[in-house]
Each structure stands twice: as C-alpha cells, then as structure tokens.
Image (cartoon, rainbow, N blue to C red; front, side):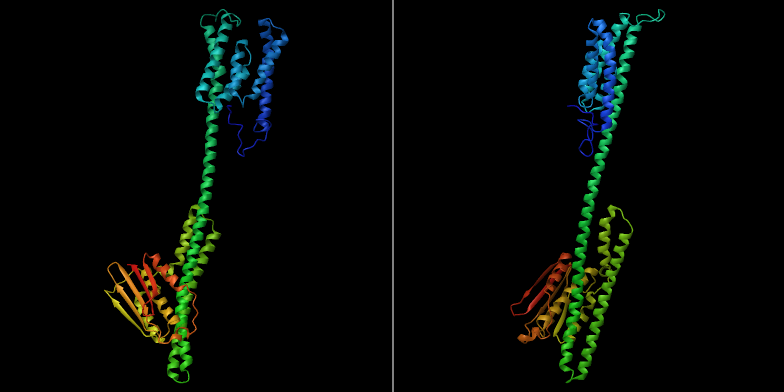
Length: 441
C-alpha cells in the first residue's frame, strides 16, 4: 500500500472516517471524486456514441471510472492506472491530474512515479495525436499542416502530466522535510529532558557531597575543641579546691577552646549562608538548561571557598595543636622529619585534620596515654602517624565520659582518599592504637 504521507497523524490516531486523517481531507476527496465522476459521465456520452454503445452504459462507465479518485490517498497508483486505461476514451483528465499529483507527493519509489508519469504522457499524446490527425479537432486552413497534430498532442500531454508531477514532487519533498524537522525537534526535546534529569542527578550528588563534607568539617571542629573543653573542665573540677591557680589556668584554657570553636563554627555557618544566598538567587533568576550542571558545581565550589582560600588550618599550626593536647594533660611529643616546605592548602588542611582527629580519639578512648606524633616530609608525599601507648589505668578511657559517634576514622579515610592518599588505622601489638596516612604532595 502506497500512501501520500497525509494519513499519518502526530498523535498516532485518526480524527476522520476510514483512512482519512481529518474530516477536511475526506470532504475534499469526496468533492474531487464527485467532480471527476460527473466529468467522466458527461464524457461517457461521447464515448458511447463513438463506440455504438447504449448511452446509459457510457454514463455509468464514466461515473464509475471517475469515482476511483475517492481512494487517491490510499492507492494513488491505482488511480493513475485507471486514468491510463480510460484515456483512449478521452475521459478522466481531472482524475489523471489529481492522481499524478498525489502519486508524486507520496512515498512511492521514484522509478514507479517516473514510469507511470511516462505512461500517462504517452497515453495522452497518442490519444490527442490520433484525434487531431483524424480531423476530430478542426482548425482553420491557414494553420493546418503536418506540424499541427504533434504540436497539439505534445502540448496536451505536457500540460496534463508535467505540472501535477512537478508540484507533487515539491509538496512531497517539503512534507518530508517538515517531518524530518519535527523528528529532530522531538529528538532535541528528549535530549534536553535527559540533560535536565542528569543535571538534577548531578546537583543531587553535589548536594550529598556537600552534606558529607560539611558534616565532616563540623565533626572535626566540634569534636576536638569540645573534647579538650570537657577534659579541662574535668581537671578544673578536680583541682578547683586544692590548687586555685591551676584551676584558673584550666578555666582560661576552656574559655580559649570555646572561643576557637565558636570562631570556626561562625566561619562555617557564614559559608553556608553564602551558599543559601547563591541558591536563592539562582531560583529567582531563570537560567538556561545548559547552565544547570555549572550551577551545581558553582554551589559546591562556593561552599569550599573557605578551604581553598587557605584560611583553614595548616601544618604550621600543628605545634599549637599538640600544645593544646599537652595542656589538657596528655603526654605527647611531636617529631618532624625531612625538609619542611609548604603544600597545597587542601593537602595541609587534610594532614592537620588527620592529626587533630587522632588526638581527639586519644582523649576519648585512652585518656592519659602517652602519644607520639610523627610528620615526614618526603619528595612526592607527606606522611603522618599518631600512635598512643596503652592508657596507664584501664578505666581512664571513660573517665571524661566523652561520647563517640564512630565517624572520626571514616571521615579521615574519606579525606585522605579524596586526595589520592592511603589511610590505615588499627591497634598495636602493645595494646595502643595507631593512625597512619600518606598524602601525595
């Protein structure tokens, strides 16, 4: 079955009867079929006289042949073949013109269109040549001659075949172009939808990463400072009456620790507020779909502004960190190997946090245990190790009653892994605990 392409709908269904796409197309085809049937019926009268047939037979034959135009959208080849068959009877020219146009505009192969157009051209040429030669077409004596018959036949053949075929080819090509453009538009819409979904997934992933990072930062800031505050508070409670001067020093240390913790929390909350303002601005101002992924990355980068700006902790503050633990009563020594040099801010902050969290764990789980902090500067990496001996008293680990969420070691491992480093932690043979990390420089 060869269709013209007009019977397809975008929704996949039909709004008209039978094979018609719309009622408008059905009305048009019924009108053309009626006009063709009337034309062929009138021409059937002359055909009946020439063929010595009853008048009714010629009229019925012509009306039946002309009504074939009704199925032009479904079977344009059949319409053209019927026109070629009735062309010797000098009828069906409307059917031939419309049939050739419909065939040329359809999705039929070009060889079929060319063959049927050539047959129609030949049929019309022969019929008019014969009629003109036999004298059925009268002409004035001044214009009669040998050239008149072929000229008349050629003019009629070209006039009834060339215009409808050329117009049909143009309309068919334009229709296929529009369908191709619609398909491309649908494809682009699907791609944009996929991009939007992927951008939302990337944004959700970025939000999850930021939540994890912020939780890790909050743990590092709060756990260490507050752990030292609790240790100093316990010591303050123990010596408040026996040694007032030491109690004053411990109280001052608690105050310093609290202020440092508040300062770091304010800085972190400031970054979070900046991120909220950034997000609200992005919601108010519409942005192109292509910028959604960039906006998620920008939001993640904005929340990392503090770390990347170099304002966070660094290795130069490691001695102060160890001194704070020593002031809290921990016996801790720091040893540095290799040539001291500066690293990327993220590397120094990660190394600092690893040592900080390891010392916090000693305060929580091995209070009073002697601790060794080792830092090694190597050619292409920096290594750190925090190892504590067993606590002097079995019950010392829980003396300060410090809670533990179990996220410290996991956070340190994630930090080091993000920089391509190696993190190892575990108990020692002597009953202590060791935390080791190596980070590429």
